[in-house]
Length: 168
Image (tube, rainbow, N blue to C red; front, top):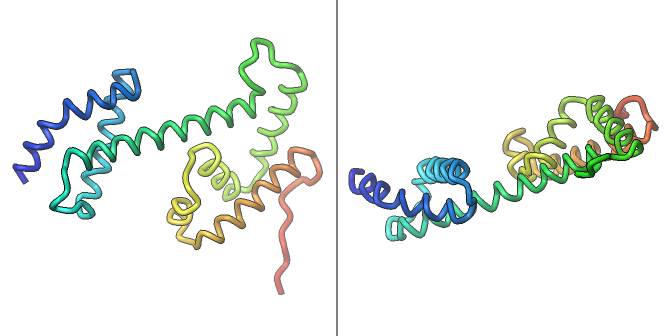
């Protein structure tokens, strides 16, 4: 283990330099390195012994950066959707639509809000949500479809609350 610790200490400056080249911001680079090392340490069992530690850590760091970038883009799109863009003076219509959609989102049941938040804002994959809820991925997909439909209907003012199906 001390050999691994020594290798890790030796690679830390290189990882930080690579993270800084990706993020172009010191604090973000530090956060990225920390998240990458945490992920690497948690998945040490899956690493092949004959593999190159440096390449493995760089791959993890790069994937973490890509995942964070995708999440931030999704979050920005969601904010833009709710606020109506980055106009200096948002139109009254856009403000009303954003407020209506946020109000509709608040009226969804907690499970539907959580599903939409995890997938649309946090950028989790369907499989990750299925793992969180401990249900099959198909169940997540159908629940998410119903949540999106309920949000659309609530946003348009067509229903007061999500409809329930009666099973016999």
